[in-house]
Image (cartoon, rainbow over the protein chains, first blue to last red):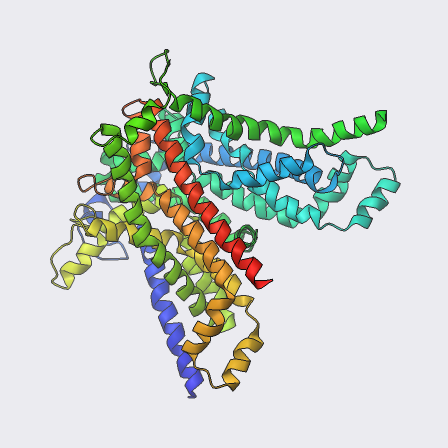
Amino acid sequence: MSMKRIKTLLLVLLASVIAVVFLLPLVWMISTSFKNDFEALSGKMNFIPLKPTFDNYIKGFSGELMNVPILKWITNSLMVGIAGTAIVLLIASMAAFALARLKDLPLRRTLLSMFIASLMIPGVLTFLPMYMEFNALGLINTYAALILPYTAGAFGVFLLYQFFISFPKDIEEAARIDGANKWKLYTSIMLPSSVSIMVTLLIFTFMGIYNDFVWPLYATTSPEMRTITAGIAMMAQGSYTQSYGKLMAMTAAAAIPVVVIFIIGQRSFVKAITQSAIK
Amino acid sequence: MVKSWHSKLTSSLFVLPYFICFAAFLLFPILYGVYISLHNFELLSPEHDFVGLKHYITIFTPGTYLNSLFFNGLWNTIQFVIYSVPLLIVVGLALAMLIQHLPSKIRGMFRTFYFLPYALSASVMSVIWLMIFDTNSGFLNSLLMKLNIPAIPWLTDQPWAWVSLITTTLWWTIGFNMIIFINALNQVPEDFYEAASLDGANAWDKFIHITLPSIKPVMLFVMITSTIASFNVFAQPFLLTRGGPGDSTKVLLINVLDQAFIRKEIGSASAMAILMALLIMIISVVQFKLTYGNKGEES
């Protein structure tokens, strides 16, 4: 074997050891979720449960377990994530289209710099006043409170603006000569050509909303209104920690939808991260 | 003339929906936050007296409750920043370089493995690690027991609490930095390395004289995003150590939210939040200047 091959082999070995460290907590979570309480708390280091059981999942989903409406939480999270993402995609793409292509937009430069500057504003600045705002409107513990705050994010506008600004001008002009108005230009030229970047934004936004936990933790007060992340956070602080098997089953249920989306959309997600870095 | 007025209006209509959301959930809260911080604003009381800068002055008056709440929280946050940021940069870069040197067929797979925890929410991440760090039946202490090493109180004693918080932070977020470094490394021209090889440079020389200078702007970007993220740390100490042992991991954001939601003092909590936001923005601006100055030098 040549030196180079030995070196490669050693690197693969090292990478594999690190991969085990990264994956082990996830494997342990899955393994524990199939153990009964006694085994989960026994301190045994067995990855294959001695008496594998689906009990934690079945009882969790049926709501029988610990009085936790886990299915409702997941439904809430999916609904809030889908609604929030849909609004963001629509309003961000419209705004980005106008900022990039409609040169007669009043205050175009000012708006653009204002939106981009807002990317620097830390969340802590708006958290409490936003809570008070929703509180005053009587909207705490409603879906509105869980969805609307995400619509102000400028990342989507920024990402799509970058895309629209580099869109070739001749296609747009050809359409205009054919008599297309702005709305038609947006719906039949810009939107169809931006599918890939929109998918990127979709995955990024959905994951952000689905995984957020501080805002939904404070913006909801009744158990039925919680999102899955806020719900799991509450469980982690309560007496449920006495039963790791059940807690891990619920945690796995919370993680699986977003992990699946993440793996499917990984390329897009990486692209969004890269583009946010090059700004 | 009429047409141009009409055209401007239709153009504005495209921005209007986003602008309304932007105004309602970003601009207004910022201004309202300043207003709240200048008042005695209690969550349950309908009366809000104007107190001017009282909360801010109290925060900077030694010996007061607010003063210790703010500066203890700040100090704990700064400790977290100091422990986590260098590791977030070094480990992120090391993983990126490791992946770069793997055979191209398996690169994607390993990238996914290291990046996967980033997909998890803070609460899922914390619950998994609560189980691993559990003193009595946790995975880590069970492992130590097998090796005849006494159990370690991972979350309830210092310095272990910091070790645990940094470990989980690295595991959870390092994928983000790694991705950015991988991209940066991909953009370093191959011929730089080839030329250096001809000059007889070894791997370390290449790293110091080619890799590092080439990725300097990205390095600064990673430094600032990591610093800001670490400054905003909340979930890990809130869910894993609950601010303990004692108050040693009660970071600033925990104190701000406790003041608002447990003691129901929104006014002073808002003043703390604004000071925290200002600090974070100062860091961003300093970083921006550094990056900008750097680009000016190169061009």
